[in-house]
Length: 399
Image (tube, rainbow, N blue to C red; front, side, top):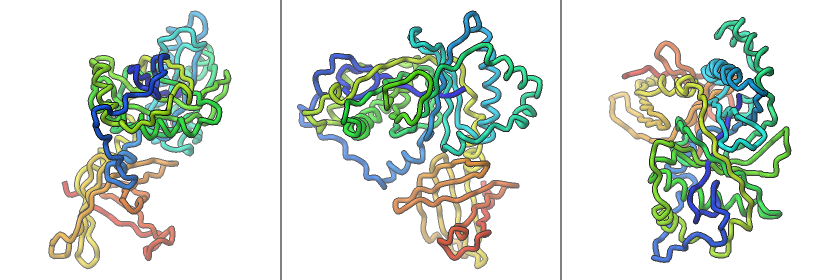
């Protein structure tokens, strides 16, 4: 009941992503036609702030499962029942997603992997409320699941990963195949390898994701913890794939690389920076994304909200997924200014937070929606404004 994301590159010329040919003695083409690379977006640009708002998760946990002999049918039945439990946890905001995947390689020492994603370690470490889960799916059913689970499989190892890079849109992407490249940097080359992924390959896969319908996204993560069988890799790169779509050909990918990265350093050979091994995984079961508390909060928030000050001035927030448009008006209804900001939502320990990511910093507030009103806590509790610690800005829905 844990989660995994993966990706394997199909291009022979790509020297830093998941599934690359072992004939990697050459660097990618260096813009021979004089094509200039795309300008790197500034850290506080709207594009980069939107990308941060669309970050799909922060932490990912994988559990590797070895099915006991003759128990595969029973194991899959149990996992389908665990899916109900994970949908309850997603509804409560305790995790972002859950899925079960089967490796195509049958010689890995495990048969399935389960994957959880979280937006914080607090969410991951929070204990399950088994009483609430029992009330949701039935206490007797829950007891039977807990009793039967260890009889069907053995957990051979777990891994905890932190997301370091990703392509937009990130969230709500539903692949049916994920391909992972596990990366082991050469001695003393850890930081240089990670820089190549972040500086060059992330831009390339962003462009490929836009051009190739079969590639739903790319991710780059760092290993924080593992138990069970010892692993030597420290990073993974992955592609999230839609197997029903036809990929673009290698020539088109090569053209994209040349356009995006003509400045790739000619003295860098990725095979000298890291070793790589890859696997492909196929989707077996996925918890319903609509169960996610985050998705449900977006449904509640979308639309226009109005807050009126005591002197008659008012402000309107127009919310769409990942975006806040804030407009200020005089008491006579004259628009005095507006601002568009990327926006994201998190749920931690039962509290709901929204973030408006501005070019000069991020506004974070606890919020709650009740009876058609949006209650936004002001920051007086932190001593950053003149607001009182218990002050709230109250918006009413206007559409």
